[in-house]
Each structure stands twice: as C-alpha cells, then as structure tokens.
Image (cartoon, rainbow, N blue to C red; front, top):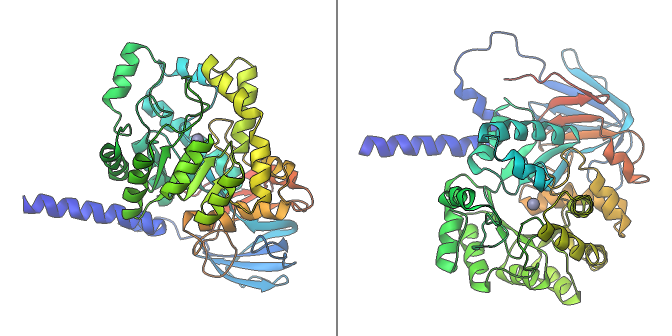
Length: 456
Ligand SMILES: [Zn+2]
C-alpha cells in the first residue's frame, strides 16, 4: 500500500510541476536532442511599443527575448549580437499577447447542428476540433485563455500538451465543466430519454444544496480544474425556458466560492439576470461572465467587491444572429431576443460606472479566431480603445492572478508578444488582423503567415 501511495504522490507532484513551470516539462523526456538547439536569443525591433497598455507607448524599442522570457526592453533599434535572431517589426505596433477570459475550445456554436453532430462524433473527434480551435485562437493574437467549460479531461490534456510545446495554442487556464443545479444552465436539458440518461451517468458537475455543491466543486478540482465556473443564473444557450434569473440559492453559491477559494482557485460565475449577478457578487466570485442586466445597485456591488465583468459581447452578437437564422432551438432563440434589448445598455452603464472589465469573447458560441471583434463591440458602447486593450492584457492578467507573468512587456515576464499594422488605439479594427504572434518566445505567425511550429 505504501509504495502505491508514494507512486501516486510522485505522479501528483509531476502534474503540479508541469502546471507551474510548463517550460520545464520537456525535461521529462530524457534523450538528448538529435539536432543542435536553435538560437535562444531573439531581438525584436518594434516600430511602436505599447509595453504596458494603459500607459503611453514608448516608441521605437528593442525587446530582447531569452529562453521564452523577456530579458530586456531597450530604447531604439539595438543590433543583435552574433548568434541572436532578429525579428523586424520596425513598421508594426507591438503589444503584449492578448488574454481571452472566456472560450470553449470544445464548442463550435450552432446548437442545432451540434446536436446532430453529437450522434456521429466521438470525444476523440471533439478533441481534435478543440486542437484546431486552440491554434485559430493563438493565431488571432490570443496567447492565454480561460476555457470555461468543456470535456474536462480533454481540455486538461490539451492544456498540458500546449504547455509541453507539443501542440500550438494559447496557455490554457481550465475550468473543467460548469457547475450547475439540476435543470440549470449546465444540465442536459431537452435531450431524449436515452441521451439524457447517458449524460446524467457522468454529471459530477450537477449539484443541489450547499453540501452537494461543495462536492461538485471538489470534483472539478479533482479532474484538474484551475478555475471554477458555475451557472448562477439561467443561460441563453440552454434548451429550456424559464428565464435568466438566479438558479442557485445564495447558500449554494457561497458553498462553491468558499470551497474553490480554499483550494486556491478563482471563481467565474455565469450570470445574466440581476438576481443571478447580485447573488454571485455577494457570494464573493472573482468574475461575472455576461452580466446582461446591470443596474446602479449591481454596479455599486461590483465596485464594492472588486469583481471583474467579462462582457462576452462577441457571444451576444452570435446568439442573436443564430437565433434569427433558425440555428437555435426555440427556447434559446427566445432568450437571445430577451437579452438583445438590454445587454448593450447594461455594459455601457458598467463601463461608465467604474466596473473593472476583463476581455472575454465566449468563443465557441460564436466562431473561434475572431476574438479581435470584441474590441470593436466594447468600444461601440463607450469604452475607450486604450482601456479595451488594457482589459485584454494588464487587467485580464490581474483578474487571472497572473499579473507577474503576463499582460505586460517588461523584463522577467513571459515572451507573449503580438503586433498589428497601424495604430489600434486610433482604429480598434486593427485588432482583427494580428499579423505577428510569439508565445513563450516561439514565433507562431510572422508577416501574417503561419510559422512552422518546432515541436519539442
Ligand atoms: Zn461560455
């Protein structure tokens, strides 16, 4: 028995190390590399450098990247020494890699089609689609995501393969499955008896009552979740009528938040209606996803708790379009119309009212790889362009609890760097055409072209 326990402890220790220091995970493969290592120092000449979004750009600069980290940032164009590589972005606007706080790599939108596909696809098919979605997202300039709900072991495997350098994609902070009450936004609503039965056989994320919700939270952590997501209110996407107000009791929400925080996990609450948003804020969540109905009382509550709003405007645009095109079940289409009338005003009020905002698209509801549209949508309801850029870098990093590693181009930070042509502060549409992407020092896109990904 002792040796089994020891072996398990070792396995657990290895997994934890891989999460904390993904770059070091490759060292578990013992054989020496067959080919000489490529140059590990890169000099980037940036025509304009927005090192810290929210502050003034610092003009022509040279970023020195060594072993996946930013080693130095210097004024002007410094010639690289012998053996170092030069990336010429002297006519580009360079900034930190983007953080999207809300994606679903396992989802591809269009619920009616997805229901048909579900009868003909295995989870292995879905995983490979998730791999492609991760790459599309990276090539849109997103170097870190939170995956807020998908096949938990599949997303965990994708997260670790990206961290090992075997698959091209953004750094993933994964939620496992969204915790929900029975018949709530995360249940298998509207499926026929046989399919519903299969779903319910494997639904540790469903909970009723605070004790059960503590169990469901621990189940997600057991399966590898780094962040906890729960459905505080009804959702637009679920195939069940019954509105968008709170589905969980205050006690259930509190049980989830306290359990997650005890394990050092931040908590994201899916919440549309006021009772859902207010309940989740009072329970102490770290981020509110969607936030469709926000009045002055709710905005004051945001400011008091310090929680971030993740607006997911990209998803709202998508569900309304899909509903009107007949691509959503009737119950879902009706809820899409219900939120369409209020959500933009809510977000406008929140942006003006001093609510902290972290960018998130909910890609998977809409298409993957068009994350840059979120900047257009946020600025259309009154957010200043520079604040929109900050929401996807400095502020999102803070909301993730990783501000010491990502979100700014400063010595010691991860070399997650992107570039666009033109000035995105003058024209946020520039963010839809990211043509240079470096993640942890590896160039994935240059001059708008996909680069060969050096699998370690
Ligand atoms: Zn979502």
